[in-house]
Length: 462
Image (cartoon, rainbow, N blue to C red; front, side):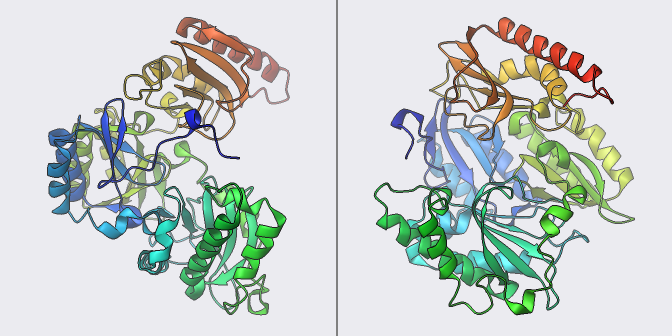
């Protein structure tokens, strides 16, 4: 069943089709491959400053989003970004735009293979298929190289996860969700990945048209046994893709569960800080408060990266990776970025909170979610040793986080309703809390959980 009209999110904005919000138009800039040069970052900063309100969001699809654009300034912004190669009309279709690849693709020695040419072939295959322009705008594909920063927590319509096989790399194909709840479809060879993706996308469109209630995403179809069987059968005509073919019997099908202890891809905090990739170099992960950067911060990052000759990679966790640097350089950059308000350590309390833009940026919200989140962040960190402990939502939609969270504060008529271990739309346990009352309620939860933790053998919360 589709969501009620008042709870539906707006469309996925793009540069040529921006979406209105409380602070003007949102113009999303697609970054194919997720690799950004210092020159490009500086150009985006200039565009945000001249034609928007000076703010740029890091999105959960690994893109950049300029805020506060007006109808009057939009044409000039498009012209300015065209000079940076960021207005390719093919990139405006969901079929080619929303392909998320492992952020460390091509530079991670623990990866099964370099997926960059595979992703490029996939992007080209989908972009040239006119029929796939009918895919929903939020339709998403992931290609995970099996390396250090996994995409396990990213929800996608079609997922490809690299496996080690006796005849070379292969990819597990799963549908409609994150790694833990997506439906297994089969295994395909690397060379067939683009064709498999196109076949599944076409099958989705066909099944979608046959449905009485039009499903918006793959997850709405794969829970139906008949549809799941038809989607698996879609792979049969493609050699070596239906089920687990004999040539891939020795593929490490258990790798997804066995490697979890070695993978860092479990949300934003896991990618922040300096991480070695080999004996000499690694990457520095940096974040922004609730994923929002100022144009000045973008300039600071661009200048620092340019000085050390590194490259910038975007992630689906609203973090930037500065890749190809040694520990000493990372220490210097970290101090420089921290001075400008960027998040440089995984223990930063701001990483424990998910918060939507709130008032005044969102017309639906009656609460200043992000201002309030900064007040509550220290308590949120105590509720979760790692990951998100608190979700502030300006309304019942819960745009900032679809996953269940330990504590959710949902804005309503200028106050907050409190939900425990659920989602923004769930029934609250307490209602109509002021910010101070919400803070007191969180403090009580922290105290209660600390008391419980003290009785456990190791006395640890979270």
